[in-house]
Image 1 (cartoon, rainbow, N blue to C red):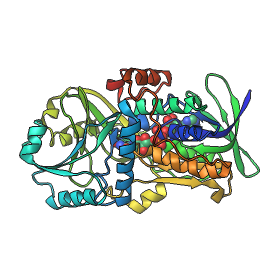
Image 2: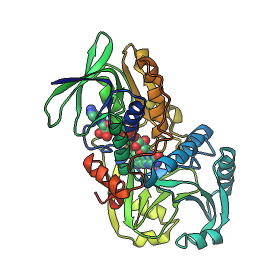
Image 3: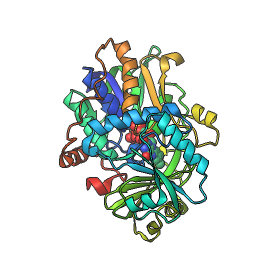
Image 4: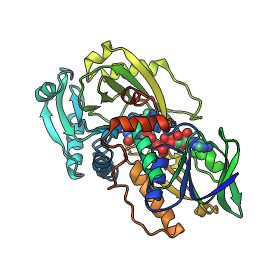
Length: 408
Ligand SMILES: Cc1cc2nc3c(=O)[nH]c(=O)nc-3n(C[C@H](O)[C@H](O)[C@H](O)COP(=O)(O)OP(=O)(O)OC[C@H]3O[C@@H](n4cnc5c(N)ncnc54)[C@H](O)[C@@H]3O)c2cc1C
């Protein structure tokens, strides 16, 4: 049986579900296909920091401002998909004090609340911090539970008429007369064709292989990173080492666990790459510089994710990690293929803004005039963690990133 929809979104991570929600809230008929459970890609395998922008404040003012704006919106609309833990940027002895000062100045310039605590005051607030702590900057970082966020976002889209189809891989894009007109899908229901006025490629690190089905080049540079969850209760804020971004500089509190990360290793295939035990050990030892007790903790699970980075941007960045990763909206009519848009790059924290940008672009083309409302309508289940976790199960969105919290 064939179906028709106004917009077909391919990819059920934070970006794709965010797009489906925004379109549905503006009254557009939308269908989303995800090859696995929702959040099965990078979204459910991320670190889950709700960035305040402080990480980028000293070298990327635009990225920092985007983060703090989205941080405030998500804290308002996403309820129990978020834990408003706060965050600390921790300067240890030997870390460059100028870097700390530049970060602080950047935060203040970009409107990010930033307070300095002495090492002694910081250790009073977080007793497990190392005795090597010289001073910290307190910022409004937080924790995202990606499975809950994606499931609630999908539920919101569905409440507004979207069809959400997990376990539905797109096996081919349908092209006619220089335009993408739909997709062939597989899955348990057998093969089917879905026709659409517009198709959005939100396949993250897999965007390149999907776009190639329409003869369009979207060159991705997938970069993997490991996260290590250890049994460790009692750390309240997100801890960031206050030094230029590098391996093992973040500790994310999860109630009875802490999630340590991460690394940055270029890979050829986002479905098939090395997962090296050495990376796990290195995460523990690097993060233990901030919290020495982590060395003694039991490892509960380790998982890797692959960043959906856009190669032309990465080429400009060179080897430096000190450039923020923005998002890229690629209107393929510029490549001679109509009815087809790709969205790549970005962050979990900024997924809603990415979705708004895509929706604004195709709303024009579809003649839809409604304004974006995703920044003001709260997500279903925002005040009810049990309901959120039931949605996680329903959409098959359980993920290694927050399995300890959702219990799924
Ligand atoms: C190690 C690591 C740590 C990170 N930490 C953070 C952090 O702390 N804070 C933050 O803000 N961001 C973080 N990020 C970045 C963030 O996780 C990603 O930018 C974001 O989750 C990407 O979401 P997405 O929806 O674009 O991609 P994805 O979540 O990968 O979604 C794409 C989906 O498309 C599906 N798909 C692919 N091909 C097909 C097909 N043919 N048919 C149907 N479906 C298909 C995939 O299965 C996948 O689910 C991190 C990333 C990594 C790798």
